[in-house]
Amino acid sequence: MAIGVQSGPPAKSSEWPMNLDVGALLEAGWRPTPFRQFILKIHSRCNLACDYCYVYEMADQGWRRQPRRMSRATIELAAHRIAEHARDNDLSHIEVILHGGEPLLAGADHIRFAVTTLRAAVDPGTEVSVLLQTNGVLLNTAFLDLFDALDVSIGVSVDGDAESHDRHRKRADGMGSYAAVRAGLEKLTAPRYRHLFDGVLSTIDLRSDPVATYESLLRFAPPTMDFLLPHGNWDFPPPGLSPDGVTTPYADWLIAVFDRWYGAPKKETHVRLFSEIIRLLLGRDSRSEAIGLSPVTIVVVETDGNLEQVDSLKAAYEGAAGTAMHVARDTFDAALLHPAIAVRQLGGRALSAECTVCDIKRVCGGGLYPHRYRSGRGFYNASVYCRDLFRLITHIHRTLANDVATLRKGS
Image (cartoon, rainbow, N blue to C red; front, side):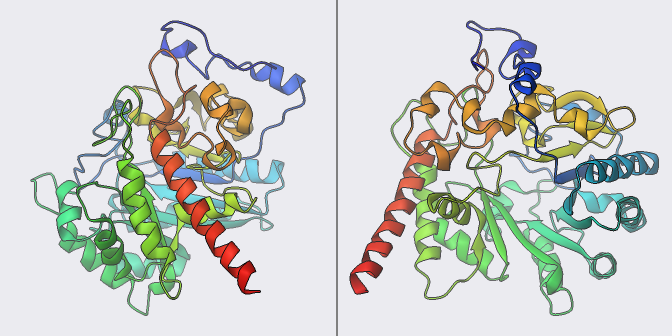
């Protein structure tokens, strides 16, 4: 089946991939890969006002229409649909991520209800891992005791040292949040709770020193670090990036971190982006939606029960993440056939023309999907970070190749 885009500037409903013929894909033998990661937006508001937030500060302002907290009835419906999907697709393991806004604003009792309801609904043959992603401001021993009892892992968003973090991650009154986040992290990383610590998530700021940022995060000894490229696209490029230029500022930043991480005398932590690139260079599949061509198996349940695609798409335009589906009436199997979800499971067949001829397409995978958007062409483009990704991947490849050559020479 030919995959292409319409010419000219069509309405968003006819931009790529909304004009994808999923029926033709099915007739040609394609079958979707079941969802394995379910993101529940249990609270739609936040106690911080981060200036780069894709939920509150970018194109889609749908959060204003969401109820503040996911109701217990909606949680029960979501749990039923998740259990149904796991059972019908014979899934041995699924992951549920409690998200927001800030999920701790939902309160301890509501979080307990959500986790116990989900686990009770799913058949005993399916393991359910639960992760909560928080900004850390409200993290205290009462919550940590609850998460210990419920076996809930905790990921914390923190952008390096106090100066870097407080530049963007402010409270509504303009005050920084680093001191409160550090206090929460110190509680989480104490011996009693450290087993709950899943890792840290940090958004890149070109103004911050990359190695200093890495080492400031390393002080908490996280099992995993995840560095995120700021959300942007061809219509609204990320800070400091000129899509028509020749510089690669984000690659330069990440390469400095990679060289520090890779050159350490012993492994200090797992950096997800670097590890996934290395996996792909060694011929394995990716486990991340940010890179590679593996099928994306993530779905979001919004606070009101609407089913959505990955919520970072909210950076593109109003309604970009929507599916017009709801847990009360639609199965997750049905959501798999939505064009915008199906296209992210097509691998190389869904790449743009410029990506198709690229030497590193299997590793890059076109970059994170939301970063490909351009009005009129939809998501049928290379990433706005194309040059940065190319430089980063080729640097890591060259580093690995040099090490392999050295090992062969030594043997």
